Length: 299
Length: 237
Ligand SMILES: [Zn+2]
Image (tube, rainbow over the protein chains, first blue to last red):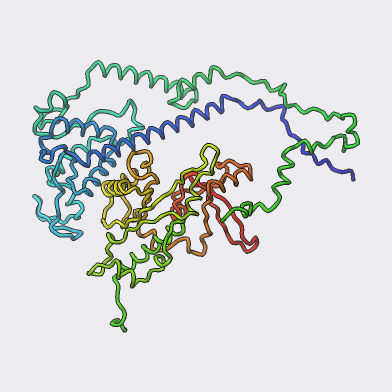
């Protein structure tokens, strides 16, 4: 039997196009978009955390009245609430309660204390006697605060702020009894008065125009099979992508050439070139006991 | 039964005794200087030191600090270079506290961080009765990015995590942290990038026990009936 060649056949397809750059660019774009979303999410989460830390010490004055908050406290509270999801708001209440405060951020009073430390508490309400969890009883200082606090919660956007279209969204309204103090600056909910949106019509129009443009571009991208949200890049890729020829690849196999003076080394017409392959050397070197490479190190 | 001649301890005190011992063992296994007798403290001794009059454990008397051993300091130092012949170890005095509050949130965590900063501790371990709030955990995750807290960060354990020492379980192989230098040598030896190593999450119970930080490499030594003793390496992420 003639000796078998120990050389590996280098398989080079003459048919495959060279690796297509635009495809990997697209992968990069997708990866980049994911990274961006993640980054935005991190930013929002950090912002919410910072807001909650600030709101632990709210309101600014120890004798503030939750029904008649100062204009600056109200404004800041409303600002903080914009990126909040209802679950974030629950966290705010939880953290305030752990600090022994009423769950409503504009209230300076401590949370209510249950008459005993029993898990279930019997309380008198307008509906008669009820049994409630102690935890529920100790969230607010009063039913009034509970109402005002929950009025905020129902306005919060369920959608995470980093997923919201067109920015974070509108400011929330507060339930207050001193609307005249806030009137100029704030959209506040007056009892029995329709809420007014403060956004100027002009701003609305501009926003609408931008939204319409984005929608159109998104539709276009979908038609083209692109990922939405990466419009400019995707378009550029489509335009610049070139058809790659399948013939004439530089890796086409060349017949073995017999070099003068090496013919005695040839096996079946091939001259083994093991000494030129640096890889071979590494393999040999690594054959010693690989497990305890670090036994010479101090342990 | 002869109840009269042996002291009886409340279940919560016995629990806390176990937690305390595991905490001490954990610090010792990480390389801090811990007295051997602290890891073997008997229930009686523990009760004598930390039990209140009503028999409940007094967590406020339990905190302790410890210093890294020379060996640990070496492990946490970057290899010396011409530029920096004397690199500062990335480790220092540790403060371990057992929180007594039923609910732990941002308030307690921030107070704790403040305490660590004020007293120049390098890092801290807070052992809580129940898991912290989500927001406190969020602060913990991002603490390195904030101005708050100590250099080396804060780790949080729930008492339940420390009731038994998981590393003493026979099925858990030995995990040994590689020094920065050993890690560099390993990668060079195999011509690897760290990203090519198999991974271990820093939230893995053993990784948590050892306080592994992202980027560190741990050597895992297993006993095998066929191969004897063999080692593998994992990169903490
Ligand atoms: Zn209140």
